[in-house]
Amino acid sequence: MTVPQILPPVGLSGCCSLGSGPLTEADAERYAGLFKVLADPTRLQILSRLAAGGCGPATVGELTELVGISQPTVSHHLKKLTDAGLLDRRRDGRSVTHTVRPEIFAQLRTVLEMG
Image 1 (cartoon, helix red, strand yellow):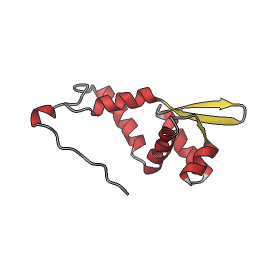
Image 2 (cartoon, rainbow, N blue to C red):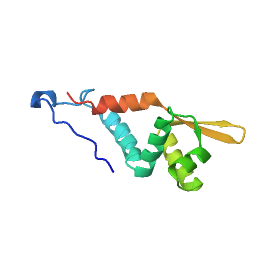
Image 3 (cartoon, helix red, strand yellow):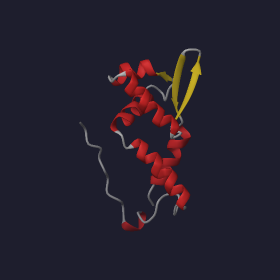
Image 4 (cartoon, rainbow, N blue to C red):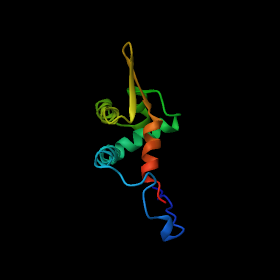
């Protein structure tokens, strides 16, 4: 497993607030819920596979093969990610595909941006 490199802040003055400023109580609740969903290693693995494939669309079967876990487990995690608004789910006949919603991740990046 590789550990991501964490660079130190340039100066303390550059690390005094979140990128979007102080959060309202409602925003804090919303973002905490999103981060809670993302705190699962299997969900992060599924998202990384979707991102590696250009952010979707991908079927449950394709993700089951890529991640190497059972179909019910993949379906469970996809439901959690979709319910949180991180993925779009589209049914076409008997096939269901999932696509990453990049705008949500852009919002999360903005919240985490320091300085």
